[in-house]
Amino acid sequence: MDNIKKKSSFAAVFSICAVMYSAYVGPGFASGTQTVSYFLNKGWIGVIVGPLVAGILCFIFNLLLFEINRIYTPHTYREAYNTIYRAKGLQLFFGTFKEIQVIVVVLIALSAQISTTATLLFQLFGLPKLIGTILFCLAVLLLALFGADLLRKVGSVLGICILLICGYVAVICLGNAWEPAMDFLARRVSYTEYGFTAPKAWFSMLMIVVFFMNGYEACVPASIGIIKTRKDVFVESLVTALLCSVSTMIFTIIFAAGMPAVLKEEIPTLWAINELSNAGWISRILYVVFAIAAMLSSSVAFIFTVCNRFEPLIQKVWIKSTGFSRKLVIALVFILICTFGSSFGLLNIIKYGYGTFTTIVGPVMLVPLIISVPYRLWKDRKDGILAENYELKEAK
Image 1 (cartoon, rainbow, N blue to C red):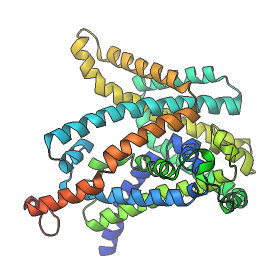
Image 2 (image 1 turned 180 degrees about the vertical axis):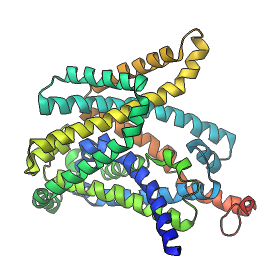
Image 3 (image 1 turned 60 degrees about the vertical axis):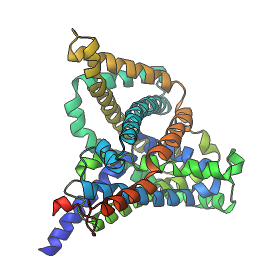
Image 4 (image 1 turned 90 degrees about the vertical axis):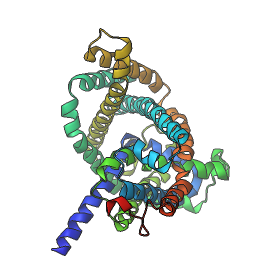
């Protein structure tokens, strides 16, 4: 019976890891553009060393945040940060920053997804990018307004599908990629050849931990009653870090086989399927179908997020409007802005949009945790809020 309990407990903890990982393995990872942009233009250190160190950081931040979850059981991301930072000024700052972060994520990610879809449809079927953009945006708008329940039901399935496709790409491409990738490593190509200094190269690579931690928001309420012990925190942190860093490393090795030309590829994963595998057209079509499906699911979720956030605010101004009309206007505004943003091209969106986003969010939301979480635990233990074993005294 004890063994059964241990297994079920591990299965529950692993489900949290799965949420964290699926939030990372989204369209940006599936297209390969994100991986190439963060690691391959840093030379040989970006192939294995960079993802490994990023994984160590991911492990540390998971330890810190899920320990807060375990002890204080916050129900929302904002509650978690309010627990860490007790001063009203700090709570206001991090709460406001989070609101801005959500809007920026929607704008950048949706622009990237529109651009990726148009590129995939053009490369595989020759469909003009303008037509692909219009069709994708119409699908997002219609599903966001009329088909949300259906899409939410299949969203997790699409996530699993894109994960399986990525695994399949790794299996069919890694063998042929190995020798040229090892040759790239042996040549010790430096980050300086791509215009980076050592501090900039390392900072850029390690800030991908922001994407490694993308699923934390959803895991705050989900971890209640599951992450119960420090062992659970350790297991969740280790498994999540390994999943994110090792899968990233597999693809950095695959893409290293195409350096430096792969840096100019808009969809490096499609390049890998075409150049490094013996797979036929069915594999390419399956990849495109599931990648677009995952992006469609994610895009609708983004539109729903902003609609639910701003619809009550617009109601105060547009008093005689209906809920549907308000959501329609919000959805149209964001889709039009992101359609314009997609015109900058996927490579530029990832390089400048994602790059700027992680450059700001990482130091503001994650790096301070290295000091603030240990301080919070020490202070609460000193003040008698926590017992010697770092459990809430009220819980006894």
